[in-house]
Image (cartoon, rainbow, N blue to C red; front, side, top):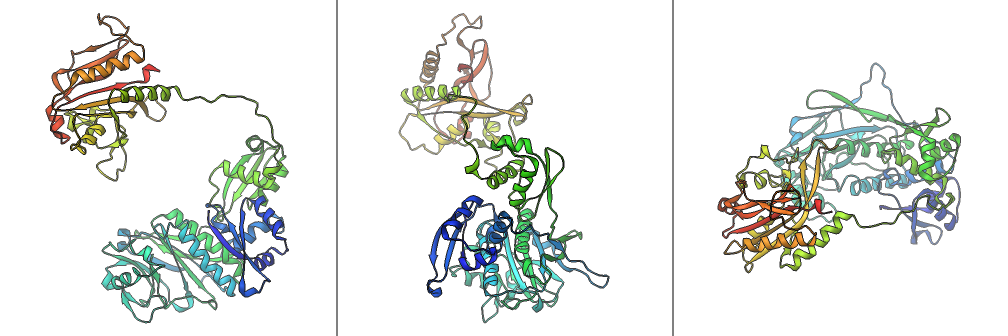
Length: 582
């Protein structure tokens, strides 16, 4: 959870009320945040302290003094949620424009922008503005890998702006707090030794082009996600703030931009008014940012009561949600329309609204009740049987392995002389590597690759795995199913088929299934060698028939398969579906 520090005097002034430390601690608890510690401020000579407050990781709107004070004032019903709106332009005015050039798609393709006009900062609010950017960079922006924020004094630069990606030697400017101009590659080398910025250098260092934003006079605003230019640097005296967020994730870029704007629009001469910026995309389309429209969700008060375990009427429920910064309207005796503001990006689902209602009601006010049902927990039967089989196979001298659930198409098809089209494999739509293209349909490839990487181990190598395979099954709701299997491999100078066969007999003895000598009915198990499989040596493999149905295979691997996996000695294997034994 992020921890932010706020001066007690500033916070109480914003709240319009004084609290004792104990009272404020209780207020934080009631709201679902935590007063972690109270630290003295030496320069205040005992007159003030700093509150360290733990904030939930998804409450980005509470990462600054402005956000905390606004949320608590609304919770205390001293204020209402402000209505944020975009400024309007007359016929002679046009919005500022940011144009994205095609090269940016190679490294950091997204930028969103907005302007705060006629802002009045003081030292405390300016510091809060800077600290919020740092908190967002560490949290939602994932150390600037997803989003990087740039803030500039608009009066020092000339729109329209260009967002481009250029070769490092083509970019030259004076970065923030530096005296001399540097090329972009020199700049990254310089900041690779900076204690604060070196963590961000690797984000773009290996690219052949670096993102850059400049104005109509070719003045560089920033080299995202590293550093801003010194020319457009902000100060406490800045009146007009231009905010740009470059990103690889549009949703997160919008959330970051909206949080900064909504937290500090209160300092504009027209409070909560935000000036939009046009962003011209690579394909020529123009999008206006920011989007301040509320999202709406209709919720049932009856269902909320059931989830929480309380009984409140529709008016009370609306009041509770309004206290949590969710503007709520009553539609009928059971239905509420909840307007989710742009500040509450953490509200994703009905359950999030229910949670806020429970917080406002007070968890300590919910009556404790004895559950109406009584259940006795127990181990899932398939897992219990799997564990018993694991112990027995290990006692037989085999070592358990745990291999990857994903594999390549070749691992289950070409290496075994089969066609992937004939295998019921679940394919990954956008695999990041050829090693992980499908869900495994067999445990055998993983064990063979494990042996291939451990060929220096003393012989024989005896490995087994009890785990799931993934099979395409169009009769299931999700189009696939898991199947629990046992696979064991014996690798030595001789095939050792008798050892694998003995392991099969041992497993069948444990699950109390007897051998069927007649092979003529659905009782017991037997081996059917009247079959063909390109993965096995001809005449040296069989299907395992259990109660009349094929449940697995056993045999000696074909030399071609052994060679495909980089092995040099013969292998005997068994693979068996153990779900029928449950």
